[in-house]
Image 1 (cartoon, rainbow, N blue to C red):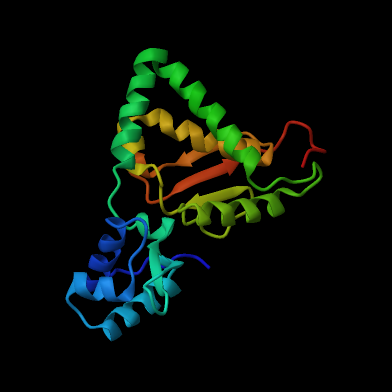
Image 2 (cartoon, helix red, strand yellow; image 1 turned 180 degrees about the vertical axis):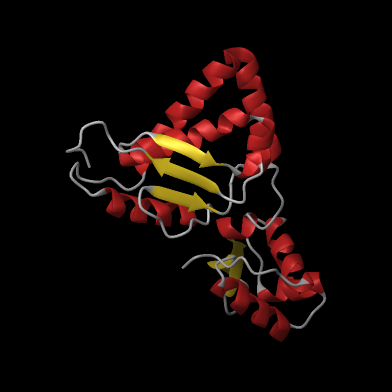
Length: 214
């Protein structure tokens, strides 16, 4: 089940924050006291948040009577709190560019793109390009690129997952190009780019020089 990305209400955000501040977990009674709401209200919020994958049941807590269930924040729940990935990535890439130069940074990003492609869907050598692009487009959508159904030899993405970062450090686009090329065995032309002001990022897969190539 994919964690929900729907906006959270004020009480649900407060409940997740309470669990963030109490890593071993909290019981329904503890949450009710912390949030100043009824136990029934806590149960309703827990049901919704557990369904959406944002919290989970942990161990039980001995009380001298009937053990009480503890609830824990999941990794998906932690992702609901702000994290400055973009800022940190920009600092790291700027540092690498200073150390390696623009060409060195681009080469490093290309190597990363190829490595990522090798962890994605693998295809037998004779797999038709259309099959590769359909699977690759779905994987990219799962990663946040929001791709359109592939046209012949082309993938269009309506969302650039590195948009702000690529606007500051254009070499970032080399990651995408290397990843796509490695995954398909084709050279890739970056025909349109949202960082350059286009409405989509369009990647065209160049036919191989050998007419028998796939």
